[in-house]
Image (cartoon, rainbow, N blue to C red):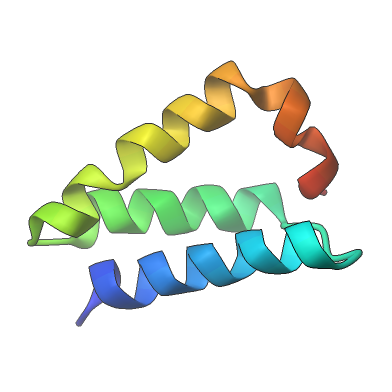
Length: 69
């Protein structure tokens, strides 16, 4: 229905929660969310947002590891 609007909001909520509490993001679930955004979105937001997220996860894996389970 609205993968770009809902998915980007859920991703931002998960990242904020991981930064401000003891919450750890399930990496498989986060990867599924990014993939759904990339494949299921018809708008530029949903299609373009996954690329920098994937790059950050790939190139800054060590720095981001504490936020993921």
